[in-house]
Length: 179
Image 1 (cartoon, helix red, strand yellow):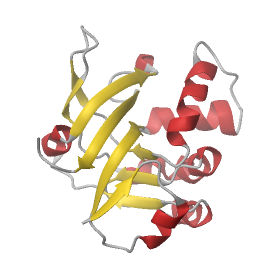
Image 2 (tube, rainbow, N blue to C red; image 1 turned 90 degrees about the horizontal axis):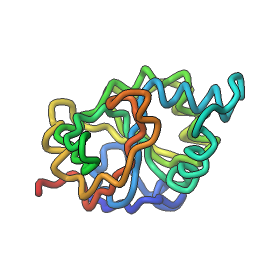
Image 3 (cartoon, helix red, strand yellow; image 1 turned 120 degrees about the vertical axis):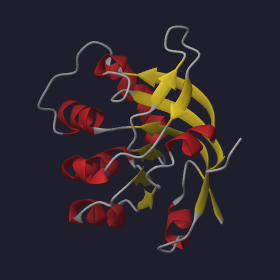
Image 4 (cartoon, rainbow, N blue to C red; image 1 turned 60 degrees about the vertical axis):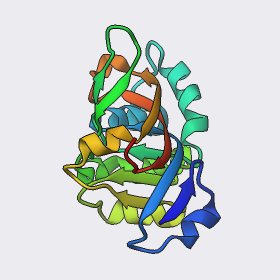
């Protein structure tokens, strides 16, 4: 198994081969439809002005996403009332839904990896070639196993999008692995 550290270097991306099993260590975020659309409209195409904490969130995300990974996932989270967050389940979401946005998000933020299920399309492939970046395929049905390899949930942004659509920031250590 190839160990990949986040943030990921261009060299590490170029060393990967299709089908390589990988183990990830570092900080990443979750991002689904609402997050990608918000990023595009607010910061990339600028068709909507920033509102509320948008600029603060943008500044916080830039260093995490530079060389980072977005996981297409709507986690099930415990500890919502105490803010002692823990992922109960963290299975991948169907990635093709992010196809209209993913390449632009990757280029704008220098995102090196995307994790999801089902693959992506030609636009994202071109984005991966340009950045460079990679699509990691997660196994559907392994939501609790993946959640067990989360070292710590570091925080959440855009909680007003709802728990599954919010931006969850989390630390992985040699994921996937059971704890």
